[in-house]
Length: 165
Image (cartoon, rainbow, N blue to C red; front, side):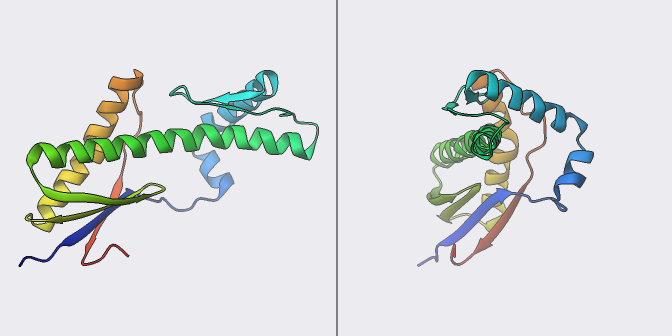
């Protein structure tokens, strides 16, 4: 009987993630944050580029509670987009597995990580399918659904082992 293998895929982490270094390399970020803060304070809610919204009553820049709400609103937009991309990764990977008739199952999703169990394919074949879905298909599907290009390359790390833990 063939043993079941597990693969995990997640977005790559780039170092260093210190705030000043990251912002310095992306000059548009500071402007986006300021515009987002102004919008949250003015409207009382935050809206992601995919249409999700979060009410942020009492968001202001005058009190610590108000700043907390503002920070939540800025973070909401980033985390919402990451969540949408992860959901599309789950859908496109599942569709590819079913379309190809592969004996594989999604075991779990934790933040930006997918854990799949598979058999009947070599490690490199399964890695190629998962990489294609997450790097190629997710941006295509995102643009098709939301009318927006992802705008950056989605890099992933793939690890394969006997267990997902």
